[in-house]
Every structure is written in C-alpha cells, then in structure tokens.
Amino acid sequence: MNQLKHLAIIMDGNGRWATNQNKLRIRGHEQGIKTVESIMTYCARDTDIETLTLYAFSTENWKRPKLEVDFLMMLLDKYLKSKLKVYMNHNIRFETIGDLSKFSNKLKERIEFTKEITKNHTGLKQVLAINYGAKDEIIRSFNKLLESSPTSITEDDLDNVLDIKDPVDLMIRTGGEHRISNFLLWQIAYSEIRFTDTLWPEFGPEELSDIIKNYTISKRRFGGL
Ligand code: IPE
Ligand code: IPE
Ligand code: MG
Image (cartoon, rainbow, N blue to C red; front, side, top):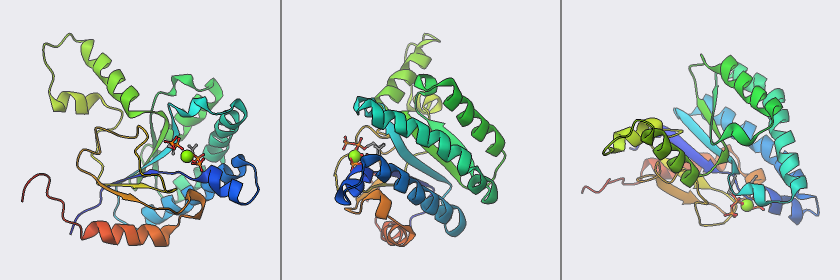
C-alpha cells in the first residue's frame, strides 16, 4: 500500500465550466473556490495527507485578458480573507510557492498575514502555487545557489533551495487536458499522475477518494523491480 504524503492538483476547467452554462469565465473561478474549500477540508479531516499543493495561477496566466487577471487577484485576496476560518477550524497551515514579487502590496500583506497566523498549525499543510512556474522556480533556485559560487552542486543542494522540497506522490489534473503546464517538474520525478475529465468546479471528495484508492494499490517501483 502506497502512503500518500504529498498530493498536488492542477485545478483546471473553471472557464469551460462557466462557458458551458453561458456564464462569464470569472463565475467559474468563483465556483472553483468552493471546490478548493471542500477538497482542502476533506484532505484535512478524512485523510493522512500531509501536504496539499494546489496550482492556482501560473507564470503564464498573466497572458490572459487583464480583466480576468485582475479578477483572479481580487478573488485570491477575498478567498484568503473569507476562508481564514477554514484554516483556523481545521488546523491547516497555509504556505505558497511561486514568485510573490509581482503581486500588489495589499495582496502580499494578506498572504503573509495568512501564513503567519497559521504557521503553528500542525495538521494539513496547504500550499498554494501562485505566480508559479516550475522553470521559473528552478532558475531562481540555481541563481540562489550561484550566490555562494559553488564549483558543483548536488541534488540535495537544489532540493534545499527550491520553493518546495517535498516530492509529489500523486498529481491530479482536472479538466481533461493531458499535460503538466509547468507545474512542479522536479518534484514529480517519480509521482503517480492521474487525469480526469471532470471540470474543477464539479470535482469533489468522492472522486478524489476513488483516485486515492487507485493510487494506494498502484505499484511504484522507483526504477527497481
Ligand atoms: C484553471 O481554470 C484556473 C486558472 C488557470 C486560473 P481555467 O481558467 O484554465 O479554465 P479553462 O481551462 O479555461 O476551462
Ligand atoms: C494550468 O492551467 C494552470 C493552473 C491550473 C493554475 P492552464 O489552463 O493555464 O493551462 P494550459 O494553458 O491549458 O496548459
Ligand atoms: Mg485551463
């Protein structure tokens, strides 16, 4: 039986969910927040998962129309404010990966406040990937290592400066696309990957539980026999 310590999810399909219902794409993002809450609460309450990393905004998502990007920034701030009680009630620690320097001061303050107030929580660690790109993370990490002018580096050296060290056990992508879209490239070296056609706003604990059951019995060989 495989242990599941680190679950990473590419939350895709919000826009299509909204379009399918003749709604504006931004309504899909609002609905997606409800899924975030239900999946996070399920992981904290009903599983032994230690780390839940959610891909919320990629380094490439700035290419979207300004209105959608602005709405996503507003929604992130609103989410952190209104859902703080979920983090408090379920003993969940909030962390982020990605380059925060591009965000407004107000949003950065909200992010730091949420991290600070939840930092001693001992339950689930919920990591939000925002302005995150794996290539960007790896390049930022190499540049950190270069500061001490090394003549060579090891895997451990890189691990220690990445935004997140924990290897991913299981990665899930909702929304029907079969690609990684620049998420956690180093950390998924040996992770199991599952794709589902379900759009993120329609994803729920029942389907997650089925995927986890299937993961638990899969044979992870890590190159051995
Ligand atoms: C994922 O949903 C959320 C973000 C990337 C912010 P999308 O907005 O990509 O939804 P689709 O893929 O267009 O349906
Ligand atoms: C990946 O979804 C990024 C997030 C879920 C935050 P995208 O919708 O941006 O990915 P592509 O463009 O389909 O590859
Ligand atoms: Mg998408």
